[in-house]
Image (cartoon, rainbow, N blue to C red; front, side, top):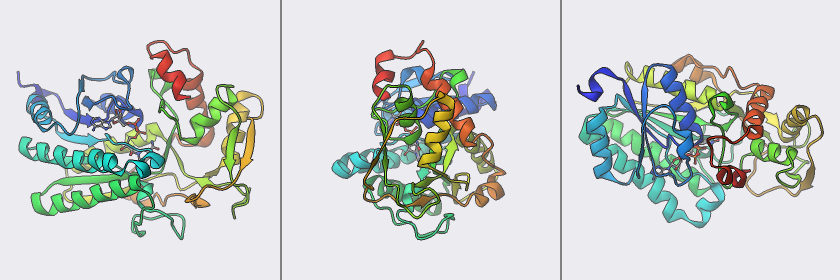
Length: 342
Ligand SMILES: NC(=O)c1ccc[n+]([C@@H]2O[C@H](COP(=O)([O-])OP(=O)(O)OC[C@H]3O[C@@H](n4cnc5c(N)ncnc54)[C@H](O)[C@@H]3O)[C@@H](O)[C@H]2O)c1
């Protein structure tokens, strides 16, 4: 039997990571079989539960060609990337090599294997310091860090592959991914963790010291920064919708994935405090360079093009699911690995 002929395989790079593993779960729920390629540089073996894991690197052209020939995926979802903003500034070659050169190798292997549909994990970091919120897809893209520039470069490359080779590409620009599918044993386990919600939960659980609030004198209702948190399950749903749309639509599309309803740092602390049953230990610290007061999406295009709205992204729902994940017994996960992550 030809593997690719009866099952709808989707090649998922970075499927052992946070967002990628939730996308694999959603793909399986929707009748697809995710085939993960991951070098486990930041991902976890335990997070790959809905299809095979091929441990390897997207820089390995031969491996990619062989995997594509074996599984004949209908599309590629490309999550694999390095994504620590601070690190990207001190190791630019590593970031451009992994995120940009790696993506070119992947696109070439797809071309060779006759795979045409590509869903890319882009980011609101491609917009940089915005003048105006909510941010529409037409806003200028002027990233202020190496990570954001690496993602914008990939968007540019995708546009060129679309016009030169007829690639069908969707760039999904996520805002702040958060939450977990704890009931299915996956959640956020970055190491180091830089995202607010897991850090606040770690502080509430006594796994770290007080949470630093970087600036409480911004021009926002409570003085702290506003961000657009979107549940990782909502992101996963958007990926499946983008995949299905790509069967009928050609060309390049860039679509924001956010709620358009931002929450402040203090609102996040309050939601976690409510869940914990006591206030989260905190300390006020100076503003950080490059942190805009507000960053949130205009989500209309996602609704129009994908029929997507964020259904699970209410802050209390996000916090409850993340709490369930972080407070759960660590069966099946590498205890050391997860402890270090919080
Ligand atoms: N988490 C967020 O809030 C967020 C926001 C915007 C965009 N993104 C983007 O979404 C994607 C997923 O983010 P995440 O938070 O799940 O990150 P993650 O670090 O948890 O997942 C990335 C995965 O890619 C793998 N990987 C990295 N380089 C690879 C390579 N060269 N070959 C094979 N595998 C490789 C890692 O091992 C990891 O499993 C990234 O592209 C990130 O830039 C994330």
